[in-house]
Image (cartoon, rainbow, N blue to C red; front, side):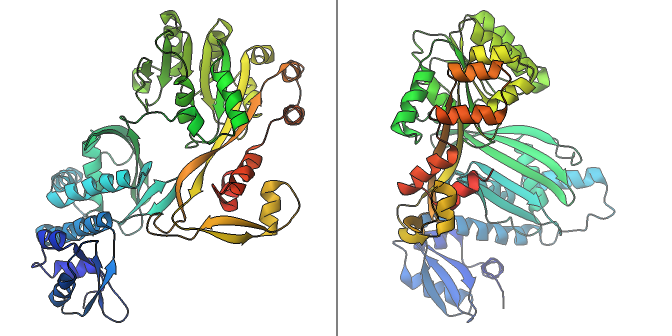
Length: 496
């Protein structure tokens, strides 16, 4: 008797995709009582549940399942069945095979329907789940672990059918125009996809590992629009100060935080406040994530020697009013950006630092003299993203006193707060969507004097707090009290 629904379906050719989709049913698993659990989507035929059970010679009972989950499961089951039918007799050991022959076999296999269907379904599922990345990781035994990054957290997804992992990786590399025969060095590529009315740009990165290749696909929605600055989750007072900085005529404004913390989204939101019809606005990005009307956007081309610093020097001759530099990576980029901000331009950029104060020593480390940092830097916005509590399953609970004290900075007293219990809408996580935590440093005259005077980081931190800067964790506490996120989330992203 088969142990899983995948294996069982391969033994039942009479159950076609058309039958399952028409009746909105699909086999899910065999429970411990040797009963077949059949998924039944809304509007599905209950009589078909028994028919599926008869096909497996098992008694069957229904379990509710969403329509998208039903379709995804059917595609996975059918792909497995087709693979067993097409390739079951062709599997051979790779030991002793010529490398070129093996690469040719993989290329041919990558163009077979089960592989194409699986990769297409993988991308579609990621888009439907609003995942930002797809991770495919080779593990011992030639298997492939597939995970989606949703709301900043990785979660397992359906693995490809047995014996297809190498073909799936080859299919992705073919689409990204990478060398399928090269498995010993990292490669980078891109795939353009149109899904319904959306244009997607998939950035593909492959890296060799001990057991095979690790592939990461980043999903960028080219048809997306930047979020309004007021919708990022800032408090009213912080929004007013950030908006005032974004409206300045000149100077340097930085957004800091780790990768994936929403820095570029914030920069786009700030740029959208500028009057593009009256100003020359140019961005330098790697990659371009949103297409902004009325703004000249220049992509970085590292292979062609087109870097942030080289582009910056060129666009200064384009008479810009506002410049956005996707990332201040090196001393050359920092030097040109500082020069631009000193000569009447407003410059937006990002840095990888843990907090707002950390941007100052980071600029100094990049070789910018302290007097230039003091003369040009107007403000630094540090940020993180935390997951929102799912509105469909939020419940009240008694929060531990230790956690309350850690986040609030107050006494260790238990509090009645909210968290997600987990439901089908959030796929059991208790979270759906994200909201930002922010820490804004406005560089006033006192801080400028401290920078030129060589003040230590601790002194700069004290001055910023005296000037009214709220920390990331303090902003997180206000969002916990408002029922937007949880203590666990705030602790997770502000642990440093």
